[in-house]
Image 1 (cartoon, rainbow, N blue to C red):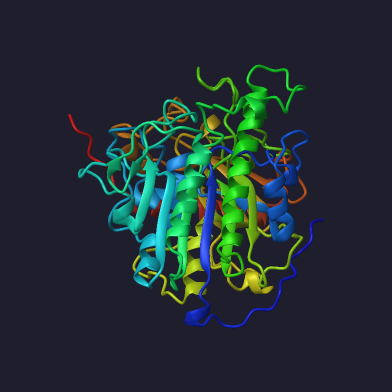
Image 2: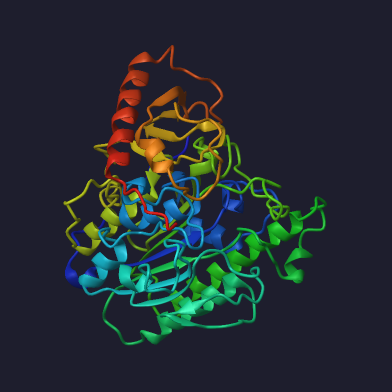
Length: 465
């Protein structure tokens, strides 16, 4: 049994004591891919140290089992289908994060925070175009971003845009390029009294993977094709995190900064598509991987460090999610949370003071492209519900949104419910719906009602003919 939290005492947040926030998000990093989460080979000394200096969240969840919805949920605190980010956003797709959604960056910028996005954006189909909203339109003062993956690979990327201006070919590996920009932005703030929110979105370890040969050489025992490349990719990302954290120390920003490290979803499946031959990520003991509504697709590494507030060297098995970041940051910054739309996240501010975390609503996930026609997940305490739908079972898993899909979803109902006790049964093997009937009935009713509510709210995008 993991430890419940012990935290350093902290008083009410005064305006002058508002913390800065650094969120570091990886792409397709598996639950079991870090040394501090049990990987036997990958070298992650900086993240292991970050965990030792703070809190390791063993039941940390992304907002979705795929990239774009996960990012939408993190920034808005809302189940991503509510905003119409139903799946990953292909270039030219009509999906985008709408102007009606209030992001962490927008709320904090209005409260006097400096804001910065670096790395993967993936919240519009028309990137760096007036046809869609860009990071600057969603509250980021400074942005250095790509629409989706680093191209042509992590090595020497050519597709970054800085504040609307194409940057052109760059030298180095994507995670280090992203870290350079993040560090330079922080150093450019020298003398500023304003707190900041920085959202650092690494492309690693998403395909197409490229890794420094000197790091690949660290894994001579990784004999499967692409395995050493993947391990070195995670190690390179870890080194970039180390440089970023060292910059916080150099700039005397560490003491006043709440740092959160996590991943957008579970690890990519090996050889799921032609370019995924280097995808050797691990879900650890969990069932499923990316695109799954079982925990392997949505339970991800989570680390929190806040010197003087969060006691070092702790671990918690309390379920938390990236949906919780917006209400947490708002409370800590003294910012009112928007009340005009349903919010699915819960503030962790009290939890960070050592209080019991109480949720008004269970955690809920919807992703129509889930593997095995599993589209909905619900977690409440130790219980996890998974469900499919009664629509076409040949819906392509992992596809971007197509014309007619939202209509099909709105006409559907949930079916094929499964119930698991994920505290005792971490790999979701023993289905308990016939034995834990009260929990099953309660979560099934919640899932059905929330499914209809979310899909009614989400927009039905218009595709160009």
